[in-house]
Image (cartoon, rainbow, N blue to C red; front, side, top):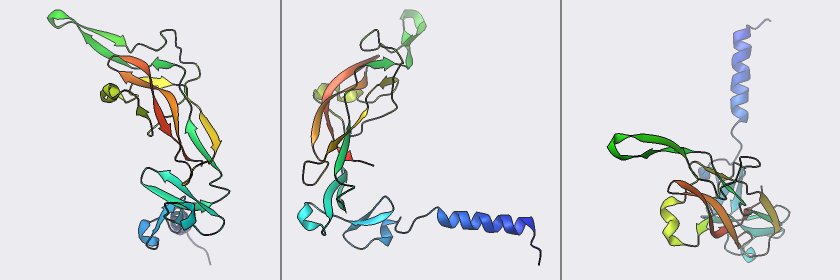
Length: 187
């Protein structure tokens, strides 16, 4: 019996669609006291004592700590300090009488280049000086921080903080701003 190409193509699309949603991908599919993490329902916890054997309580985001297998929870990661803050964006600088000039954000240090920049944003960053709060986005600025893996040392795991310097826009300049960042579970 011959089948048309359209029927076979439709069957392939349906089959591919069925594979794109892993089991347990919806919070509604997890039991009470669990949350989805990497496509699997994991138990919520506050310390490792609450976790089953061979698992460790690990903070996975600012809202939840989950019981992960000890191999997955053995390491945490955080973004190390930026060593430069490159101004890759620009703005219009207004002069008197309605004239404008297109200017680039200043870099820190002024000799910073675009070489070695990374695309990483640090949502766990907290500036040391609260006065910098209005300018804590990276819009138009780029740094060179790299991920660093460290052994999990807290309970729950991955809650330690580290002193870092982050590239952030501060007015019309890109500045290296001191602060802290929190570890996250290693992927």
